[in-house]
Length: 486
Image 1: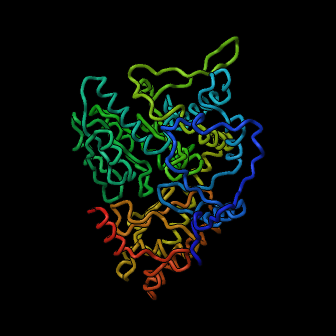
Image 2: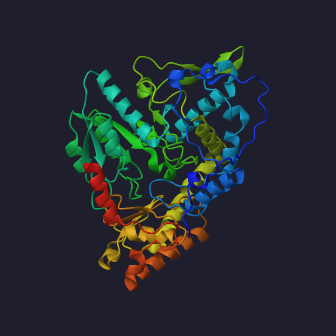
Image 3: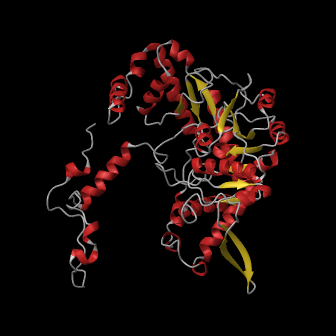
């Protein structure tokens, strides 16, 4: 396949993609519009292309990339589910899409009401008391949760410095802990892949601020001793934080707040089917039990009665709030999509989301267990982790299997994570895949396992059918090393 030229290579002098009508007003000198001190020394170089060239160029580029609208995207722990297009259409309604964030409250009651109701729905789903929608990414939700933990302990007169993180937790947790100024303390899993409660208890002292836990964990296993775990941390004076990356497995079945979690973050762009973005958009709402509400990011949206009618307004949380974590109210369009998703499904629909996600993962695992190693057998939740250890002995590693999948128009699962599984292939099919889609994916992985035995070079030289060939990884590493030194 020919490599697509970039937009500047397509440019030809004099071509235009837009012919605006006359302005109808006198033209002003540039210096009256932009002060000379802020003007460029030369005009920005922009490509000159026609409208058909522009549309076709970006349409072609979109087909080179993989996305959930093309095929299964089984990226473990990322919950890459199909996004219903009706939710996109609702977020694009003019009353939402063109709403200015600085409008007076009386002119945006619908938007404020939607945000207030969404926060109440999320609180009910998770079993917490208050939710802030302000964080715009999972990582920012983690950061907000950790800052709440820090503020809670400081308000009680002592700064605790340690956060315990099980080795089966979500991969971003140690980075968030460090960024928030804590020391990350790892806790090993037992032979069953679950938190070793005795090992956890041995780490608990009066300098532990909290435990950061993913449940189900990244092995796709539910922590059966979760109430013992949360109780132990609370006895030591710490708080328990749930990384909500895997909340898709719990919707309508269990609530984190009922298990003893004090803080929960939600990935609206995972669990509640809003678009993932390259750094945005996203939604990392954070919820807390009542005792921590005073530390949430502010302002909050409250509902009160005025002249017998509901009126929504913003209200400062108070002096103990960790403050804003984003401008205005966060990513509002994402909130509209998440709200539409929750309301369209209802309680029974959300429960079916979790049930179908669990069913799909267990079905896929049952089809692959004879062809790849399954280090932690038994029923999984929404995802499971295979090991390509037997393929490694045949000369094919997990990364090569992921690249070979691209030849079949399928995205790779998460590879080499979690770190406690060698040659990990972390697979999350989500609830939106049909049995035919799951069988197609399983058939491809089974074929690749056979190729690893009979023709390993074919796998190790993949991908063969993509616009760009396999990266020369040795050369790339050398070039990167030289670049860093310079």
